[in-house]
Length: 195
Image (cartoon, rainbow, N blue to C red; front, side, top):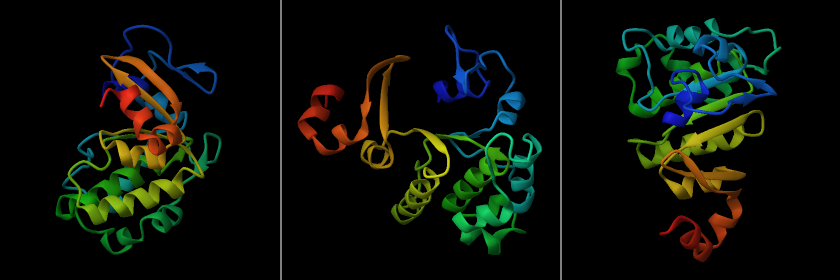
């Protein structure tokens, strides 16, 4: 969570730079970082409960240009291709949605502008297994269009979705490499991750 908050300008990094497309974004405000094409889904979803799905999605568009300069243009139609379940829920208040539907809205809202990079903080936390599988499939399709950074404690899920893995402890990277190695070789996983 701290890493992602630093990447999106909610917490200042304690040292170093945060480079995005060759530009140091450390110290920039969260709205300016969002305008560069970075979408963020916080742990706990961060939806506006009294607002409808459509209103929550509209908020995601406010922070970013929608002309294609900063990434993929995520129109409502394109988003609903990934989350068809939300079509029938557009005029329902977010607090009346299931946890899985709320997570879908949070991801859809983050995508709503032109996103090149999607940051997901514990996206599977507290969700039913069927919803986890549904979101896993969506993220697997999404990664063909945009870069995704996932902070997640469910190692098997994140390894199956990832091309590369960075393992951190106390704010420092202690392992970096292809996800496939950790996914397929359990002895290697135990050695690297001290399991």
